[in-house]
Image: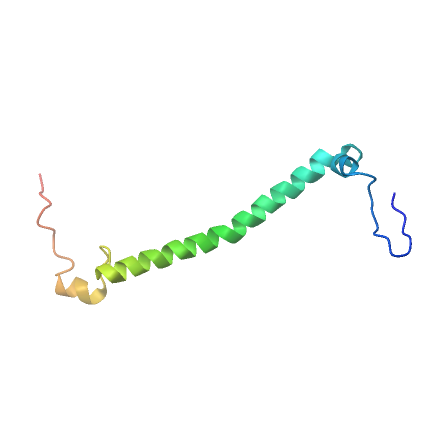
Length: 91
């Protein structure tokens, strides 16, 4: 184990290899750290990416001036919402 002397850094392992192996528990411990890091990175960056993509999509729609196929209530009334589409033919 580690010994503490005045002004020295407390070290728990004798070498990097000993820290990596952790008396046989290393693969479990380091894989748990890795999986935790990957999960946290995913949980942080996925919403940021989604937000960025949503903002880009909104900017593109505003630039086009088209609501991307969506109708507001005023557009639906003006376009005769509820009326049957002309391109649909009954058999």
